[in-house]
Amino acid sequence: MFTIVIRVIIIYLVVLFLYRVMGKRQIGEMQPFELVLTLIIADLATIPMAEVNIPVLHGIVPLLTLFILHTILIFASQKSDSLNRVICGKPVIVINPKGIDYKALKALNISIDDIFEAMRGCGYFKLEQVQYAIMETTGKMSIMPKSGCAPVTNEDLKLKVQEAALPINIISEGKVLKDNLKIARISLDEIMKEIEKLGVKKINDILILTIDKNGEGFLQKKYGEYSTFQMEMKGE
Amino acid sequence: MKPWFRYFSFFLILGILIAVSIIEDKIVSNSLIKVNDYCFEIENAISEDGKIKNMDMVMLVDNLEYEWKENEDSMCFMVNHKSIQEIGVEISKMKSYLAGDDVKEFKASLELIKFYTHSYLHFMGASWHNVL
Image (cartoon, rainbow over all chains, first blue to last red; front, side, top):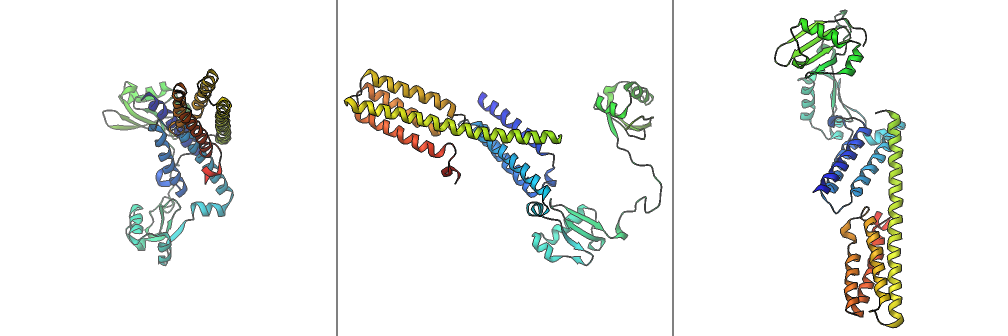
């Protein structure tokens, strides 16, 4: 049993390392060849974990070989557009201003129901609301609505609004994120002064505290309602 | 992940793969050839006087067993242990045939070991038979 534990640890660490080096992708955002790679890796990793007769190297060597192949393939597809098209495919317009492109549907092997499902996912329930629908190489559908059906933006209304700023997590589940404090260029004492005004005495009572570039703060207690506050910020 | 680390990992892993392949090939071919050489030595020792129950033969078989055990340990890192255990089994049989002075069975085991070393060479190490 001890052997199995050690083998599992070794293979897990190798797979973890390979995934970190290969980069982050969510399942839904994977290219077809990346999905295939994930399935093969999962299968390859499990066999030598429990099969004590098979050397661990028999599991690790194919994993490393796949990583090398994957890296070469990515590099080559970045350099060559035609190779990229062969490996990843290309986006296909399935709805254009004239309506649904039935030929494209046939080529992609998708049904009208799939199109409606993707449209509903994007918040459009009628075909006449859609100007273009594009099937991406990842299998996701991107939809561009007709101008009359598109959501109104501040730009449309010619409104001047403050640029949105990315909130930085300062305290999460009672723990101070020191690296984020440095990014925000703010001290813990300043934070404490501000939260004391909101009736919080201990950091441990805070579920989440965020501050953005504009100094807008959000504080949610572990057992209580949220509140907002304003602070002066020195950096991003 | 920084780009240099990705490149470093790529070349490191490529190096590991090449090294593992070369080491495997060297270990497998050297080990099996050595075992084969020992078998020929034993075969020659039999044909000289037609008897097997003597100290020289015991020494030769012991040497073969020692050599195989050494090689088996290193080969187990590379190949499935179950696939290479037949040679060990036949050496053990040879030792009992030697004690009973059973020349016929002793020779049969020796032939089997030679056969196994040849067949192992087919599925271990770098070989087009395995690739295709």
